Image (cartoon, rainbow, N blue to C red; front, top):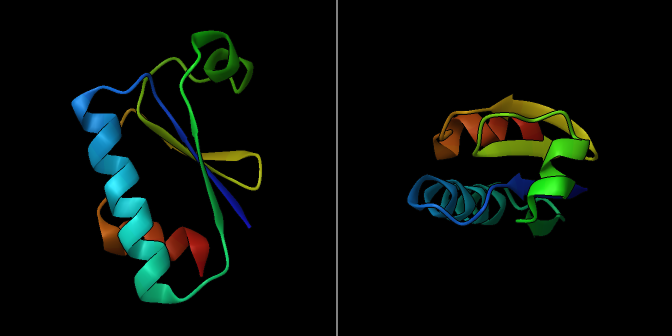
Length: 76
């Protein structure tokens, strides 16, 4: 599984990244976590609000910092 955090590195993006790492660790799934920080790459996903979360190339949520429990629902 490939999990992408889409965001330029703002504080909300960093919180989402930390929550993703914790969710992956707690759930025990095998996942590659990638941070997409370039605006042109983020826009290729059709995302206009960051942070955003994409799982296996599909944007699940944009413009919201998900909790660890919310992220687990998308990755398990």
